Image 1 (cartoon, rainbow, N blue to C red):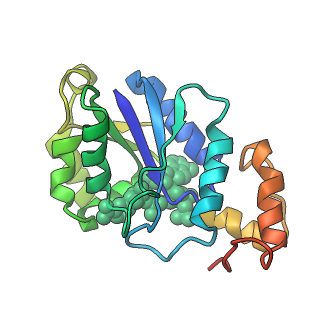
Image 2 (image 1 turned 90 degrees about the horizontal axis):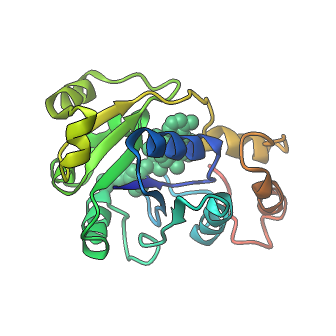
Length: 214
Ligand SMILES: Nc1ncnc2c1ncn2[C@@H]1O[C@H](COP(=O)(O)OP(=O)(O)OP(=O)(O)O)[C@@H](O)[C@H]1O
Ligand SMILES: O=C(O)c1ccc[n+]([C@@H]2O[C@H](COP(=O)([O-])O)[C@@H](O)[C@H]2O)c1
């Protein structure tokens, strides 16, 4: 089974990496594809350019052989709808079952997604706990309607939703951008190898493809 972790990754942080690692382990996934969104739907556009977000994800996943940088959304035109991404994974990896990995905040908003009701035709969903994001009532109903025990989840090609308790790391890209903007340290919130590139992008906005953080 392949894990698919989509995100704006503006920037990628240790919360994303632990999310991927713990879900990979819990579900015995072969690997996790990190898929940066080009034009993320339903939110303001990212502060960092797509090229910079891609390079930061590349550096962050480089040392884990079970993590893969996947730039398919950056190669597409227009909004990065997850339904299109899942269908594309089906085309490129027809022999692999797919698991879409979501933090609870993202799962709570799932019913606002483009063609959301078709997502489970193309993948399972794994929902991970996240501090500050309790399971909303409508999402709890969705989870109940599609919950599958682990054994069946592994056997079935898609259609199941599984909730996974992960280490609760209260880290967000929003807080990281605010710290960088204010010139504060983000050490131990992002992988060590991202500190220099991030500080560069935030201290030299005019020379890079940097856009003013919102
Ligand atoms: N600390 C975390 N714990 C669990 N899940 C997380 C965590 N951070 C991000 N995620 C999940 O990772 C996916 C991509 O998140 P995203 O790139 O939007 O990061 P973010 O930190 O939520 O960013 P922002 O603060 O800009 O909204 C989403 O499914 C989100 O729920
Ligand atoms: O397909 C959609 O309509 C849709 C709506 C909102 C979010 N998503 C995807 O969900 C992932 C997490 O989104 P975000 O905004 O938390 O970074 C990312 O891959 C987005 O492209 C997808």
